[in-house]
Length: 168
Image 1 (cartoon, rainbow, N blue to C red):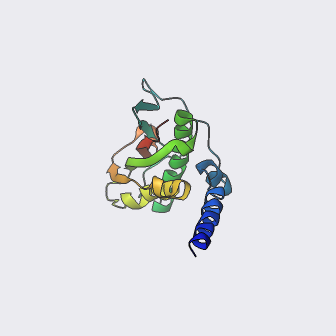
Image 2: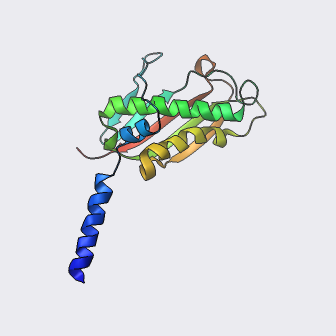
Image 3: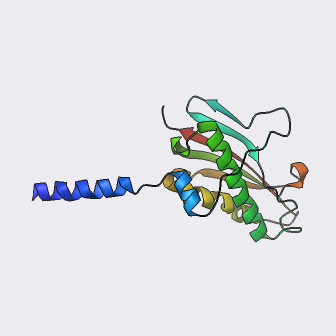
């Protein structure tokens, strides 16, 4: 019986690991592609690594306007999702391999919003949902979602990320 259990466990483990998908494979399977990263808009860098922690500068989409007046909450959600792809591109450039990401630690999501708009968390869910779809449990994170009066160039959202990397 013990040998039978060990054999079943070995088959299950082999099947599970052989079918494990990398984040890049998941992105491709979802029909998405990792965009080229843009240059910083001012005198800063896109990321800074300190030990095994990677700090990303704020990133935003090519979607402009205030959520709640110019954009619907659903359009804001999609803008945050698009920003997620931009952030994945920066993570890929910084690490060379998205599988090096051990876990997402903290996310700050800022929503360019109309004064009476209060659905900031639902907008930033566009980012959070994408990270969990691509990275699984590693993509879950602590998060703040806030509304702001304005963002650079009137972008709809800006998101900052902190991730922990696997030891090399």
